[in-house]
Length: 106
Image 1 (tube, rainbow, N blue to C red):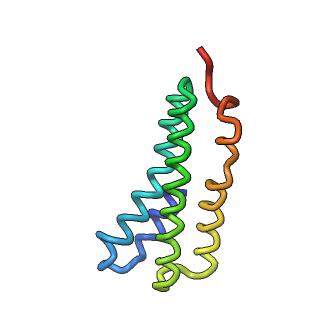
Image 2 (image 1 turned 60 degrees about the horizontal axis):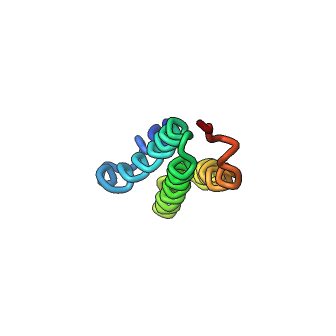
């Protein structure tokens, strides 16, 4: 999804390069990076959960930037809905309900 966000933001206005474009790209890339970090730290349930919570926070931030993008008419309603539904799915993940299912014990 981060690659798709990157590609769609190539068409945002130049004046948004260091504000909206940079912010939405950074937040969207942070999600898979935090998932990878959580996975590597799954021996420690609290740290794992913390990184997954960070993912949800970044997904929420991307949702805000998508809202701005739509409101500024940089995204069509169709593209907006496509992206927003994917990021809302991240916030619906049930990993935090049972982190012990994903964490190793040693």
